[in-house]
Image (tube, rainbow, N blue to C red; front, side, top):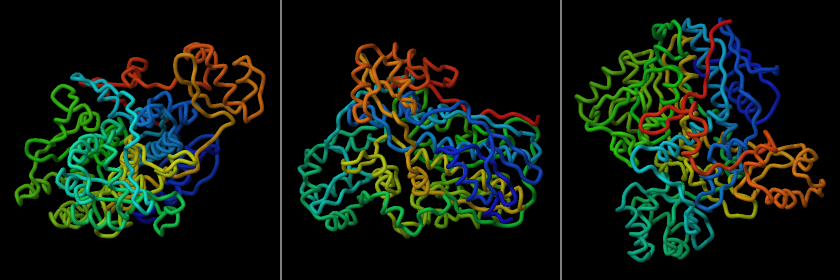
Length: 576
């Protein structure tokens, strides 16, 4: 075996089909496991035997409805709606692989973890954790009102090309729109809602911005962006993405480093107990990756600039810390270091000399510029797993546009996949690709730790938001009935293959399939959601719009530290 094939010589067993099983199958195959079918998930190899179980059958859109995802995705249209991709199922598949890799690593280190259980609802609550935290914060919790935003991004050029924009400074924003002849008032009024669109999952922008974009060709818009510091990216189709030469490649690049002493052993406890992770990351992708590793038992030390990460002060507040920051970084150790100075870089090297993992999401080339690249760190700690979580990987060359959530949605085809037929493609304003990127980064780090344990070499692993977005492009699952319907006092998601039984419970005759949606809506409109929820059973779930209510309905799924924080979706058990 090699570092890039950490599961070579392992046998994986997968039950049935569907988006979870197919996601697990694809990823274990890319890690070089031999895959076969069985009644349950399992992974076995030299000195290792792991079983995994997904708790209860579930339907994608029922979980999206029940965990607030439909409400977040549809907020800018003022109506909850399904994402249109199997988002929760794919994240649950990745989380299943993470659990199996973590248990494999534990056994290789002497910890007899042999079973893992998880549920899709637990994964979904992690995926919307920042929004739940903000809605349950101690201080001025955010209330998520539906705000129709017909003037939201993306924009369309004079030659009909839809594009997303990204800006990290008001100066770039001002210069770009002024160069397109936009009225000063519209530029000023658009900046704040544009900046806060990540937090609010909605953005109401002045119409004049769209009119300015429609007055220029896309090439002219690109040229203006280049001179003003704005970032632009065309909105592409799924077919265009699949035609790219890098499409379909493994989502992680694993590279062996130096030979190293064996990794630390372990006794009992969570599978990553005794593993030390050091991170220098910002925003969502990197912090979520290490948050997942900490839920698996790792100790995480977070490097922040002197005075702390500025995002700690972003409202709403949970005690003395931003709720959105806390939900990603709760429980991590903090080391305040200015690694732009020689003394600070020495402190970083001291910190990683006995660490197992170092993760960053710096801009391309920043690691070499700082002298904190993989080669430099491996000279100090040859057993280190050096991890980078980036936006584009190598896909767009040395000077790519900003690799942020909505930009990657646009380029990767995710925006196209999310959009109903007949509508122009547009990214969801719910944070989505950043979350998938965090899951994929943690998955790659776990694979690298298994490789280190099996090969006796440290190494490096690189992941990207683009590769994470690719995972979401699987054809969505479907059922005879799969939709959102209005009852007398709210919305109900229904998913079932058994049309006859559904119609019997609705007390209506079975209509022709083309008339079925209208017949269901007419029947549901006679009674409130609560009545139908109890009468229809497991095939129906109310579409939850109040994120705070999720916590009161399921308190066992959350811890409290100034805001509600979703607990680990994994449950591990020892050898039988």
